[in-house]
Length: 197
Image (cartoon, rainbow, N blue to C red; front, side, top):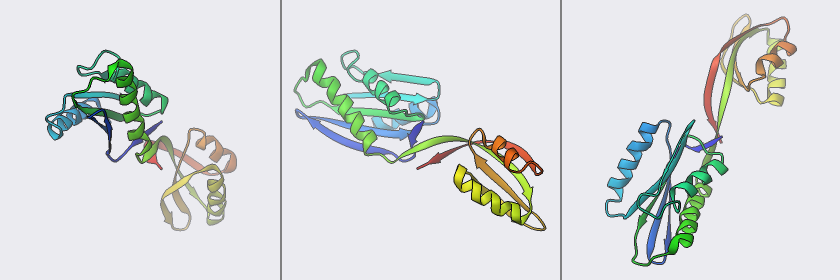
């Protein structure tokens, strides 16, 4: 899954109407609601504030007065297609006086959403597992070698008589470590969500 950590904003003009696409990181439904309130203050004279969000199992969209199915649902489908999570996509519309019709309206909302996502700095959401190991210096050299191969990262390395290190990796990291170091002490210390570019 993917998200953004920094707000991204684009503007699309279509037949005198301005469509402002805003993409933000939202980790809870409450934060998404708060951000919607903030956007309404930031653009107080807009006609519509259509949006969609995906936050874990929570998914919601709104056409905010536009014809049913022309804004919110396409934006929500876009977030799902792009495998976005923890993400709120808002399209603010300043009406320019020209009616677009349902088909052009939907394609314009969708295009605004696509541009907002495509121009954003997207990061991958990874759920990594942490392990703690104590080992000899020679074993640590071997761990660094296989760590590059398997994509481990290391934290809190302590160099004493032996080396203690915390290792972050994917779900099968523990099994790989046990197979590679059958005589070492390997302790699961939990899992952690990280964002990687």
